[in-house]
Image (cartoon, rainbow, N blue to C red):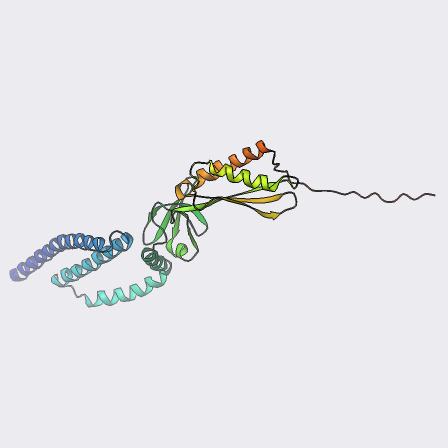
Amino acid sequence: MMDMILKGAVNIGCAGLMLVVGYFAIKYGSMLLHKALAKAENGKYALVVRFVTSVAEKVAWAFVAVMVLEKLGVDIGPIIAGLGVTGFVLGFAFQESLGSLASGMMIAINQPFKVGDFVNVSGNEGTITALDMMAVTLATPDNRKITIPNKSAWGQPIINYSALDKRRVEIVVGIAYGSNISLAKSTALETLKTIPGVLEDPAPMAEVKSLDDSSVTLTVRAWAKTPDFWTVYFAGVQAVKEAFDRVGVEIPFRQIDINIRQPLQQTV
């Protein structure tokens, strides 16, 4: 009897020691793995590094748990079989989550965006504030928080407004049919050149876009560094309007010509 008690106490002590050693070994190993992966990929795939490290930790804890249970005399065969059936059931129950996890891997590998980018994801525009293997979190310009599952994010077109170093600013303005088109184009171009943030290369341009019902529509384009896009756009719209006013180029109201036909009067 005493031998059984002593043996049980020894096994419990060994199991506890395994847990302690396993904890520090996993913690130290995880740190080394994270540093090695981060150094190898030079910070480019930080999301993948975090995911791989997390998976490695969980697998290591699974091995530790198996060894501890075996040391305590627990038959792990039925447990493993039960986990197989449970995993099969959970696979169906959490297929949406698994889809988001797989999409998260694709996002982590391809890196269509990163934290801080202004993007359009699944029809939602905003700045990315958080990114993990399951979801993308956006802060919209009117300060709303939107969380998008990675499955939805990766399954739709992604527009990244911050990815490139410069963007084209386009101002569409209509002028009256009686206005001088050449004067309007030259005025718009000279005005754009005076706006801070407008780049010289590519050079600004102004051309006739279309002949519409009430106006001749001009497209006025300039290039700016990506962070300056909205500053240049708002300043450009106001500056073009004020410049047209100074030189007498009319921006017309929408007009509709109505012809009323009177019936012929019959004479007796």
